[in-house]
Length: 253
Image (tube, rainbow, N blue to C red):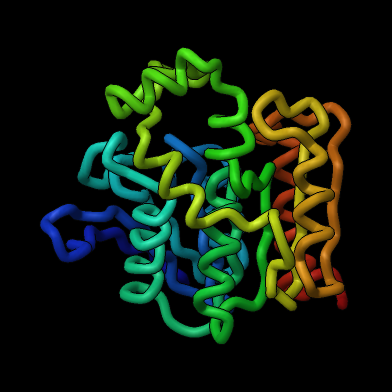
């Protein structure tokens, strides 16, 4: 009978990162949430239930400034949140990992796979959003917004998912150090990209561009014509579970 544990990891500066781990057989599924999301969202909890029903190991986590973790959201950057994810993964998990990244989590997951190639056996991106700080934020800002970002160090951006989000100059500048879509991505592992074509946040063409950039051949893109950014409807969650099951070899492969 697999059990679940939860804990908090001091990342070294007094800020604690929240995590939840489920014991079971490997590889361990690791869920990487999106921007301003957390490990209690519909996709994370659906995958946890999927793993519980199959005795599969799973790890969920919250980056600093997200969910149950400490720290301020506005202090975060892609590099900081990547380091948070690696700190939890390296400390709490062992053995092979199957990464599942939602939106920003897809971008972070790509970097985790590049930095821990000996451990990662596959990657699932759900509306994966590599480079979004540049292509979706900076590129869409008006000149006045860019000027305000430069002068005061942040702007407040409206969010349809909750209160306005503080977008900082540090987030944009650090994002530029983690861009991936400008050249080949040196990954040669199974990658599955699930992407809604009615996604108002991440253009569905991003998935095709990402698939083209990944050097490995075992890359598949699934477009959901009526799917939105969240891909959290029952049919979307069922597709996610089938996709993960197939990568785990439960489709008879």
